[in-house]
Image (cartoon, rainbow, N blue to C red; front, side):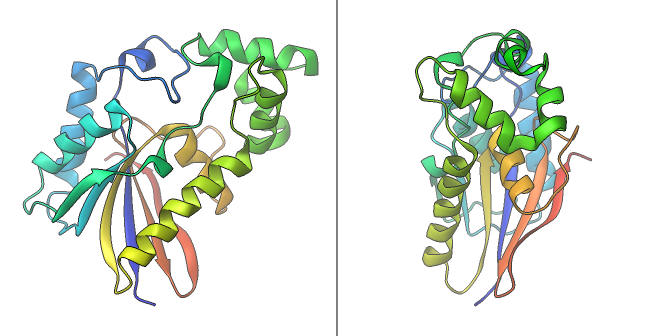
Length: 215
């Protein structure tokens, strides 16, 4: 099979990012700094000839995608949205204060921060505890997110069997989880707004050749 190269860009900073709110399937607008994040990412990618440019189907990702594309020297032939690359669904906790929620989730198990939970059991464990404690029982598990992302990558392979360069604007937690799934050490290494991570897909499998690069 021919090589597929996917450039994942985390969306620009949003109001909920600024206020440290859980932001999964809920949405908020890009801040002025967030728009600048997107423009800078576009400038770093300007020389690449992308066959297509997609984002998740959230407003913040679509707005970031359009700003990135505006900086490219050559406009991709296809621009659209792929819901497979959405952020993790945080269930009942959507829109709430992130530090308070992780303290609430972790306290019954002896933890008070998300970092402490991840250090103890990894990202899979963090998703497991959120799922257990979520009153709505809607929060996604690790495997649900990975399978969703993999379905998106499989779709791209089918659409571009001869290889392609693809831009995907996505989200921090789900990107971090997929990198973790493929063996990247992500402890204390959360994707920054506007950062770029590069995934290569070929006959040897899937691997990140870069992760969370901003400069």
